[in-house]
Image (cartoon, rainbow, N blue to C red):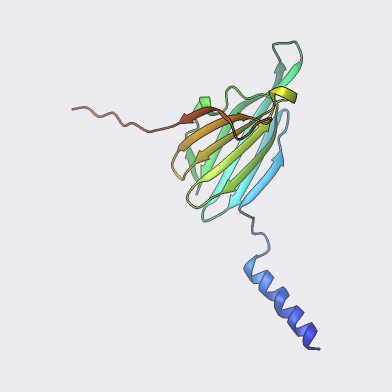
Length: 156
């Protein structure tokens, strides 16, 4: 009898600690070759990412999937995503959204064989902060590293 009670208490604790409908602090999904792919987290704040892709002929005549737009919303507020974050990415196969302490991370993997890549996009509640690109053959060796800053120009 006490075993059943202990099991019921454990089950109740799990339901309280992880309410139904709650999302983990990480989500990984395959990316549509053409259309929209959505990711969402309910971290300390709600985060949503929409990836928009389309099919087009590649430079070698083969059809490829191009990433045309990335929309990011944090706590209901849209974040400006510079085109340089995504404009050179084709054949994106998977996307992962993670929440670290005060930073959110979008991981995009794509390409094929020796051209396979991983892109890490770091952003906060107000802006994109950094983008790195590495080969999937050696992901620890960053090939491109871009830092994004905001400069406000004012009249004197």
